Each structure stands twice: as C-alpha cells, then as structure tokens.
Length: 210
Image (tube, helix red, strand yellow):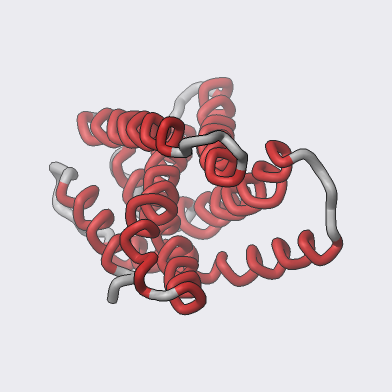
C-alpha cells in the first residue's frame, strides 16, 4: 500500500482538477497497465548497458541510460497504444492519460525499490521519483494531445517534439542532481522540484481551461 499510495494520491489530485466529468476509466486503466509493463523492458536494457560497461561522462549517462530510455519508451507507447485509441475531447484528457501511464511505471518501480531497500524509504520515494514521473507524464500528455489537436503541420511537429524533449530534459537533469557531487543537494533539488511542479501545473491548468 505504501508503494501505491503516492500514485493514487496524484491521480486523484489531477483527476479532481478537471471540470468535466471523468468518463475515461477504461483508457486510464489501460494507460496505467501499459506504464507498469514498461518497467520490464527498461530494466532489461538498463541492465544490459551496465553489464556492457558503457563508459561516458556522468551528465551524458543520465540522459542516455535513463532519461532517453524511459521517456522515449513512454512517449512511444503513449502515442501508439493510448492516444490512438482513447477518446479525446479536450487537451486535459492527454494530461490524465500521460499521468496514468507514468504512474503505472512509477508504481511498479517503487514497489521493486521498496522490496529491495525497505519501507523506510517510502516517504522519500513519494516526494521525489514518483512525483517526478507523474509531473513528466502530465507534461508529455499535454504536448502529445496538443500535437494531435493542432491544425497546422508545423505546430503539430513542434508539439510532438516538446512532448518528448521537455520530459527528457527534466528527467536527465533530475538524475544528474541526484548523482553528481554538488555539495548540499537540497540547494539544487528543492528549486528543481518547485519549478517542475509549477511548469506541470501551468500546463494542466491551461489544458483544463480549454
């Protein structure tokens, strides 16, 4: 329960922000399940990269071995298996679908982490990686649906680019902050989390107003 509580709380929070009634239960559940299934190929690929001993600078490694892999797979599956078949009436639908997929991924990842490291890490996990995955899902879903709803080809391509690029940049920066020797990590982590919350909420509120 401790591993799933953050995901449930975040999903409820963003669902309640929506002015329209929620009629997308099956697609939301499907997105969540797809997010859960993503964990397995990601773990296999990450293990392969570690086993091969791929050497690169720390900053590049955070993007190549985590951000590009995780956000790239999430983006591909969100567009291919969720948004192509789910009903979309407004941009906020994309926020919910992207959030659900990311929370599915974060939930199983969190369960596996707590099994390996103990329940005492649950609070930190809720505040950091689960929340980061959720907010990146909000951003990805917002831009992905904005792309699908765009009338101009150039605008559509640019929104698709942002749907992947922005979560990738945030994810890589977050991993770098946690991994690099930056002194007191809170000086960097707190502003990062505040900005990420602000950015994601601004997109959610903008989508909800449409």
